[in-house]
Length: 143
Image (cartoon, rainbow, N blue to C red):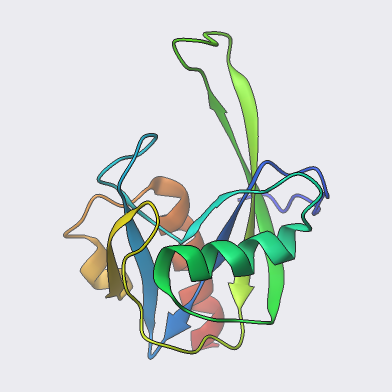
């Protein structure tokens, strides 16, 4: 995964939260990716800093509170919709959460929440970008 610099113009954000070797994942309750597991996150609001959006989305989807995140990478997806069939690039900034507190519960558009290790993720439908980021982080934390 190539490192892409953080831009204030990102479309959406993800918050990577790790506890005891397990990653916090939400089951998407709506399209796109309904039923798939991904890191908590969503669209950035107009004028909102990406870091602030990551903290907000984490809380809205899981009830987990945080105040400190650090930028990891930006993932670029190409997608289209029936209304807009021409492919569009969607820039998703991924942040690592440093001070998560609270118990995770499914809220907002999350159908469920799971704390899963890399090994446990194999039993679920997990997005490719999440698996790639989880593998990179697992190696980093073992070092």
